[in-house]
Length: 195
Image: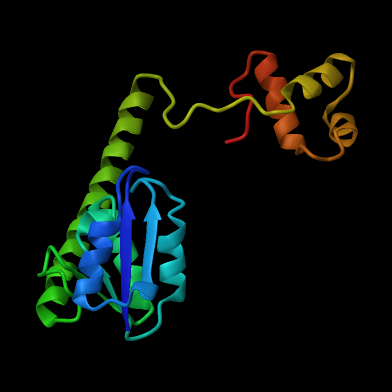
């Protein structure tokens, strides 16, 4: 069965052109998943629903690659899900990207290799950056956020309580390790939150 996917980034952008092209290609309008969501939005609910409902031998049709994925890595991941379902895909604009043909499968295999290369490059750059920062005495990664219970923990601590009674007083909602980290940070240690 032909399954269509149409996405527009802005509420003001109509989906009509994409729906018309998908319908002209032969996709039943009832089988076109439509949504208005930015490509970087992780909650593309219609894309997720389409992927969940795919059946073996279905072919996902979309007007152009930019409607399906936000980056080469994202695109390869989405197509990986399509293939695991036993389905294929076809881009109407980039007609070489058609995994119903051996040429399209070959080309997408090259895309997958390039996406893996990019993932590795990103990982290597991140590791190099963290190593360079450590050499300069800086700790990399995201800065820790204060724990939401910091004030309560410190109030109980300054009232003379040790971590175990604080743990019990807070209804065991915060781990003893976190309580100790908050206290250590307040006394001049490092980090007052959980990562």
